[in-house]
Image (cartoon, rainbow, N blue to C red):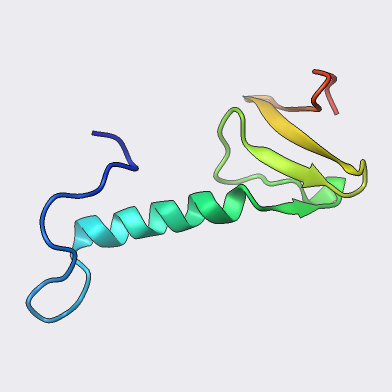
Length: 83
């Protein structure tokens, strides 16, 4: 099972609140959706929730880039050039 597999069991408990497993899943899914839509100037590139392949539209460069390495952080454009 990975982070994006649906949790087993009902999503709500007897009080009508999300169960812990479903709350965690919803938070992770929400964060993933938000991060793949991010854009901004070079100075505002993400520094949290990083993974290799994470996209970011750099408005300073006017092009999409992808995270190629985390330590050290390396961003590359579609041609493979570090940016």
